[in-house]
Length: 432
Length: 170
Image 1 (cartoon, rainbow over the protein chains, first blue to last red):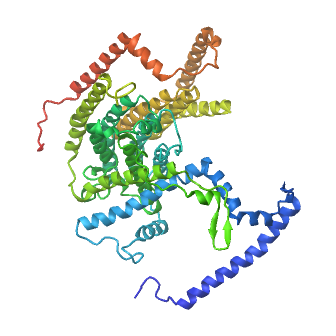
Image 2: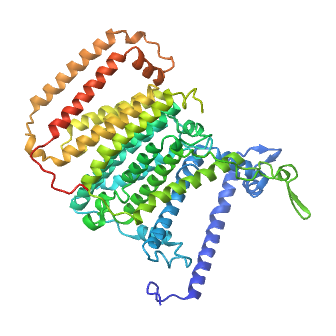
Image 3: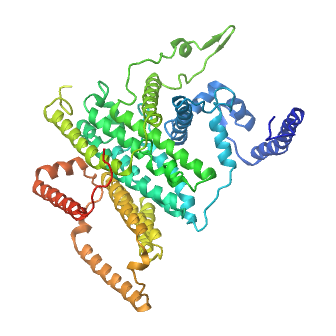
């Protein structure tokens, strides 16, 4: 039997829901109707199509799809929608949530375990929601003599920085939150903030394990930033631009991974190191230093750091797709919107509904999003896969890999790009 | 609008610069230093040169501030700094700073900065790069040599002969 709620009775559960419904209706009647009267009495409403726009009329219009669709489309063109929902935070958080579930389930299958199983009956599909509820309801414990302002601020700034990174990623033609001219440089600038936040939060918790983990994270991130930046210079040399959307548009015929495979491999390895994933997860090596710089985080602070980590993972995978795999470009697989719905409306027996404003999204945009998501999910899968396969490597091996091998290979990649450019094969005025 | 942003950036930059000097906690001081460097990046953004602003963020906030932070965390403050505080030193410092700023300001005001037209479009960074590679190429090569020399020097200084590699490398 369940021990969480031993006195659970179904009849009382139904009764409590009915009670809540009663109180909601009562409060809505007592507050809502006077509010409408106050609006009618004090505020001068506009006259539209010869009719006075009362709140009742506004509600009627809102229920009519032929009138709500244009409003919806107008809302989708606002900055708020782009930041909060589609190419921005909501989309990235959705992919991040999917990533967490797939990671746990796939890792379990790789290690011959079951993984999340009970939450949500079907293969533990609601495990993430359960974890989120647990984290929200847990107490946030701050260690004694911790530096409180930094300790509180670091997770929030971590999520904000990851979200700023997400904002630079173009998802479909024209669908990007911040279409800046120097997008790739902005990415480099944002990546530079992560080690600062890590080391500050590690220091502020006044504890040994986080500090060791933070120092390791700093070593790792700072030494892998250099091959990361160098490996992307090849793409910049060949495209002649720093704008991420223009970089995607330059790959309509072929993705750059065909000509710059070395750069792509270096970038992928540095992604693994920047994300602190196995085999480079020394900053949070749980068998040595508990959980590294995350040790003292508890409750929703830990939840925020996890959210930021997975947003960062999505952003790096999307950056790989944008730079090397051609972003949203791909053959047209999305079916065109049926013409007769636009011309004749939807016919259901005797009823014909003509809805202006359809289609909501263009075919190019939907096709681009499908290709982008397919490619990004593929890259995320390859980022997750080493966790079930590889052991953790030592820090001196990590540093020698970063400083000697990857930087050297990155220069090889730059010379390949320069050779292709000066041979007249690629780039502005090239053959291809 | 731009004036309000300019004023806010000035307050942030100068305020965090003063905080970086005056704070007793070295960690907070280096965070304030990051604020100053970030504020300067904001000025570059206001001046229509996002290229320089992004490099300011990537190099100064992302690398140099991290180095300072790292050094500060590994060093015991009491061992290297002796607190000498009295009123006279403080006022002398402030007076020196004022004299210095007035002198610098008068030099700048006397120069041709007033006659610059302000509504011209910003210079594209591609043109600057092209100039560096064509007209100013000796300066570019000289800078490259100096940087390479300093990196090599740092490597030589950091190298330690007395430590054998005790760990397996394979």
